[in-house]
Image (cartoon, helix red, strand yellow):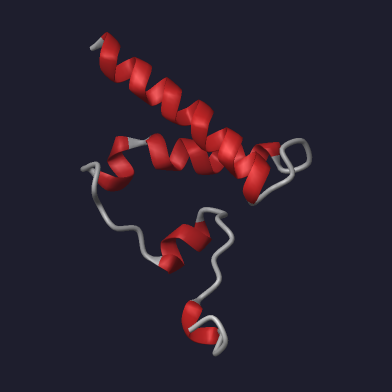
Length: 75
């Protein structure tokens, strides 16, 4: 049980750090990042570790999603 709790805590810390350095302003967007981390860590939202989250769902929880299909150069 302790290992599972430690894994959840570590993932919260790492995801917050990555979101704050790559997608959001870690100070200005602190609440958005907190909400995203809590959503991703909540077992009831996915049921299993490897569950796919659609772009629409990911966007709805606050992640900044760019669709590759909308960018001819990237695609």
